[in-house]
Length: 337
Image 1 (cartoon, rainbow, N blue to C red):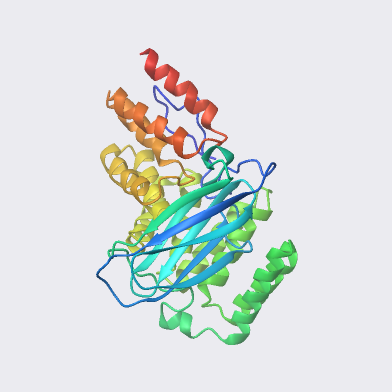
Image 2 (cartoon, rainbow, N blue to C red; image 1 turned 180 degrees about the vertical axis):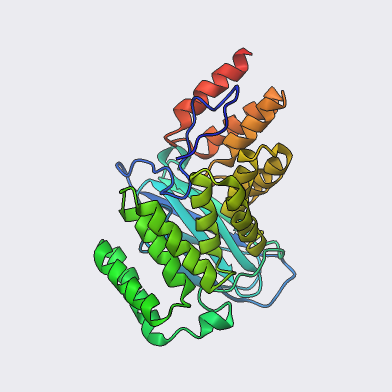
């Protein structure tokens, strides 16, 4: 875990855990529905399939719900039914308009009287188009089908909660294809998610480095390696990878948030503010809570009203987050100054 640098506002009350599972809300209680409205520009490319994928934010390899629909103009709506309360990641992908990724908080406090949480995905025409995993470079195109099949079997084992079997399949995959960056990255993620021993982070770092060595543009591996280095206090080295991740996907909220936190840890508050504001604009409910760091920055600069605004917005966006008790304490402290 890492703790924000000692300061007047949040250092004694807020501790964030980078690149492990995000703060999870209680999974108990009434299930809820999520209704997503997707809009596109009136002027733009001809209609084609938009794919919406919803997965739990706690695991990048958990079973996902996928819905595809042709979007011609205007908007359409789709519903995901009977969801447990918690954090989810929603990805909308269009071959010409690009990819939009949002954190979705499914909470009774955010639902209407019918138990429906509503959100909107708006294509503006300026989203960066992201290539799908495994198709971005010649190196990844060279991966044999046998390795890809083993990777697919590993994902099925994860859904079945057979982490040991999944790990074995992934090891077989990278043994067949050492250039399989996605496979190396999956080994790192699985190690972090399933092990708590002292050597877990060391092993995960090795896997993430192998992924980056295999494909220097592997976004998830860059992001995970940057996060792991930041978490272990190696801010200078982390900055290299977090910058590369944000360069690879400038429209990704997590990448911008992590880069902002990296600059924060290095004491470069103006740069930190720049990237944290981008992260908040791209993904307001981002589970790394960029608002906390922005509030800290504004408090240090003596701008109490801006700090309060960030914390109060966080309360509105994530009403059940485990850290909100500390946030409310910080708000009371700020208002008393």
